[in-house]
Length: 192
Image 1 (cartoon, rainbow, N blue to C red):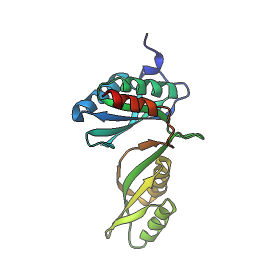
Image 2: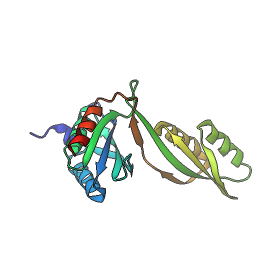
Image 3: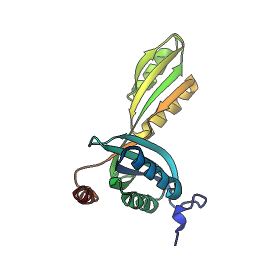
Image 4: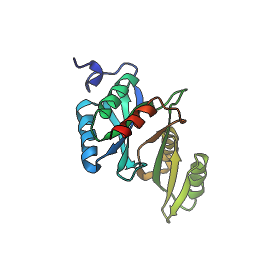
């Protein structure tokens, strides 16, 4: 029986942001399987980030979902069942007991003049951002940090006039060495 937590239309009680991280082999075919599963089964996808993994034939897929933790765990369980997936786990994106480190990178181009440039740079430095390109009418900043930090910087810069924003989406890594799903990954590699 299909449970309501998979329904895109139904509101999720206690919905917050969850992150599912998976290590996928098989190049494009493996990624297609994961994306197909997300289209069919996943709640609202906020961001999807694909990077190279630890192994040369492996991709690290980070999926930010807007749902409860139970729904995210089910998505991770379904992803684990795919033939090309060697490991997958779900983590809360925020909270007091953060199980994962979440980071995001952004390039932000802000309109400015020679008189307002200093204000923009000072605001950026409050969030750990730095200028990477300066022209007569704009400045481009780069920032990496928690997604909330990137959002706060964007809110602060909006009155100055944001011209363009390029964001990577979230990347995540479990905290510490003692992951609950660590044995599953070792077993999956032994079976492969």
